[in-house]
Image 1 (cartoon, helix red, strand yellow):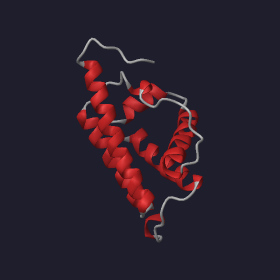
Image 2: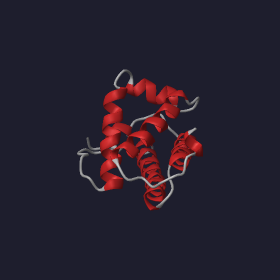
Image 3: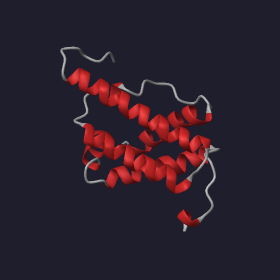
Length: 134
């Protein structure tokens, strides 16, 4: 069983793929988040996963394969604080299931920062007349 294997840090694209695939499998079946993600992504999961591999490869491994702006696709999602809390819970569980070390810790910290930033920006746009720049 994978959870019984010794844990290493995140070092490779294969590690990123394991993390992303496992995390989004949880998201897709989650009672709170599944409907939102499946509704927006639809049948484009392979493309979304590829984009997430590149994003986290760039962020964690400093191998610059991602080019894009991560916030705009999230700007008008019907999400509240509880959605971000659940997202973070699943993210932390997934990181901790497979990895330990400085990059694993960095993955969790960056997830925390991203969730806080996205939540703040979504609430700002939701509660103002401003529109996100796309």
